[in-house]
Length: 328
Image (cartoon, rainbow, N blue to C red; front, side, top):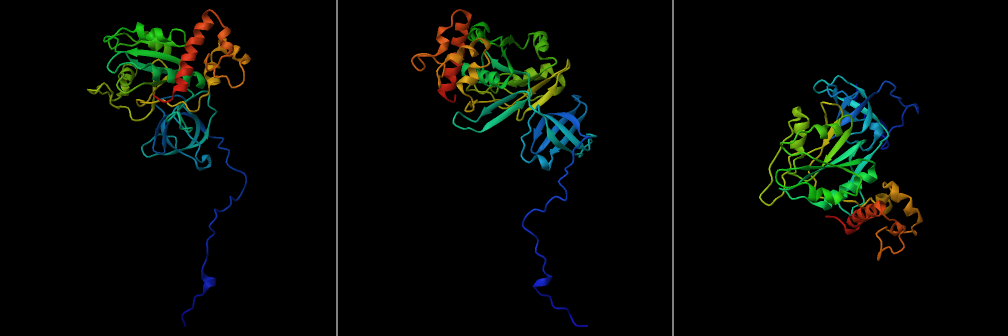
């Protein structure tokens, strides 16, 4: 028997293009279960089913979602292995509509938005009254992001044994936010009543006591804590965002310490809009008005307000000044 000779007709060339789906009817995933994302780590998302922290599953993003961003706080639909056993893996097939979004950019020249957390009800800015010293600039920037993102801001002052809280808190008296103290020896009953039943994201510099506060609120969290360096700067202990279930209901999202808060995606009207008593007045402003008053905006309609609204105008213009000054 002679050996067969091969020629070019025996070579099968695969198409370089992806094959078409056999049908246009795609899966509806009608059996998908609702879940909330509580952790994000290198292409794997930790999700809790039915808001039950004991029903934690690990999931990947389904191919049909492409590069759809999914962050802590997102409401998603998942299918697959929902047992939560070690090495099990489910799939995220849908991301729900976001109620609120807390965004920031790397700096004030970078237009790329980074979503910190989704669907949070409140943003709690944790500020140490000393060691490291408080910085109003970062607080103002976080407030701008909270107002424009639809979150109610809370200012939580820690290390009250080192300095008085009143002088720093008075700087924000005319803004719509809640101020509370949480010293190491102070009871947390009032703070817990603000957090229970809500999703709250914690922001702050490294070393201000965020992880210490989280460990008091959620004793089983065991978040790593650190000390402040000799130059007055905190050391990073939290390396990724994580949502933790509160004993009284609700969630707190602990985030890594931040050193800057870019606002390249924010416009002046976005800052004034959340203030209901000012939003109506700015409708009479000329086009392109920055609402900062004379000499930059001599025809701003906010200048005509008096009484309590005028004090809020002063506070809002401080935020607008921070927005125009650029990154910290």
